[in-house]
Length: 263
Image (cartoon, rainbow, N blue to C red):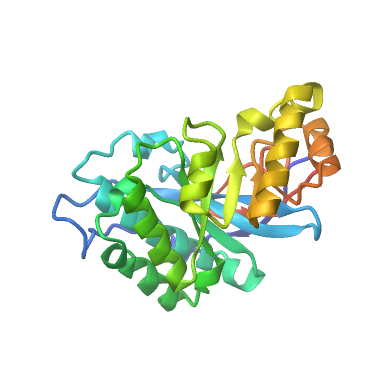
């Protein structure tokens, strides 16, 4: 079943945000127009949307790589800033603030040279849009080549403002559990490779079960992403999972918010 579209971008917001990274390192601004798609994370306890993840797209709905593939060391700082503002402005225009759900924004720690300086545009956009800071989640992947002290500084700064933090694709990188000890995020998104085929794989099921127990002990909210079938979802429900994301729940919606559908 195709998930129903609940809101689409009004004409007056269809302009493309194109700003340089003021307050961050010197370098060329990112001038390629881009847009966003949004994919919901479903709370199985309430049947409501926990958050929508903002995903970069081309202006015609092209995949993320059509934009990300153009980034260079000189432009990634500006792009990181632009994408945060774009996500907040577009989500607000689509009615996300009024819905009560959160907004999950992907960011690259290596694109943040100084946490306090590089969060200014995000704070300004959230204030301008009336978006509560405690409903904004910043997620990053553990398999990026990370400078641990630098990432810790970023996370501590973000948390001091009230933002939540998440590790994405957990279980795909080599660092694994050491990242939990070092970063202590609010949310962990289990990598889809652990979820895919979990209904037919007792090893995956056992690994996920014990990871869920560990995260619960640490007070970290787990999100199981990459849920693509009803059978996978059924196993996760049986394991006590509350938050899920994937094509079986809803596909990313270009410049729109959709309600999850698992029928």
